[in-house]
Image 1 (cartoon, rainbow over the protein chains, first blue to last red):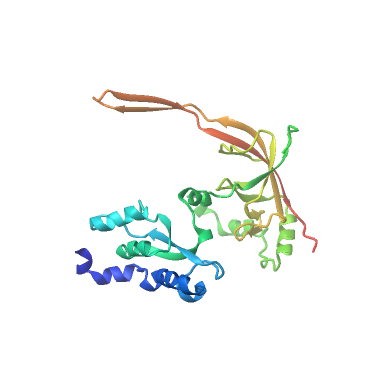
Image 2 (cartoon, one colour):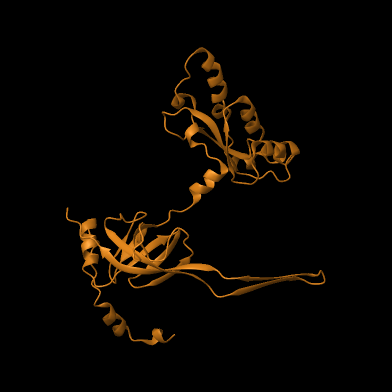
Length: 145
Length: 150
């Protein structure tokens, strides 16, 4: 109800993932049976990885919370595996995941990403760790390094 | 407030020893300018935290578990080198072949005993926790601003 009263406010503040971005799913599944899939740089306008690797996954980040929104949207976020705002989750390209994104498209930021950029939760935490800042070079007690 | 009342010529006189020079044109000249000065400092990151370090400092950091007592560490993330009159700022770090700083692990210690007492009144809940925070102490070695022979 809230969005129907103030649609302009929502559109100014949120970048809604376009259907063109999610249309890589149907393009790839249709063309995979008939001919080799087209190059990723031509099909996906919002690609973030290098042009060589095929973009096979959605990188989904929750930008806006689903508090006080419909139970369906909350259930969709649960099925996507998103628990809190700014959490990032990776799902493969298929019509089911595309439909889930479309159901919560006002809350979510989506990028197309290749398979080697997919990270689990532990891997994302590891990447956030800062570098050690030092290297063990020698030991003054005669121990080997 | 006393500094407000010092006469202007005293302040000007103190600033005279520092001559204004144009910033060095190449990194090599900048390094040689800093190298010519007697004492230096370094801003380095250890385990994600930045510290301002000088030679012979004793640095206390949260416990480094991958290091033994007596180990010599070479600091690889140096953000800034400076002396009294010049500073070089890295982008984001200064390449390690230009500035070398080493630190020796002196000890793995614990802090003072902290007693944490929790109580919820009228509920029969109270807990006493005794805790000592663990630290590692590093002795910073001399700062070597390397002469680049290019």
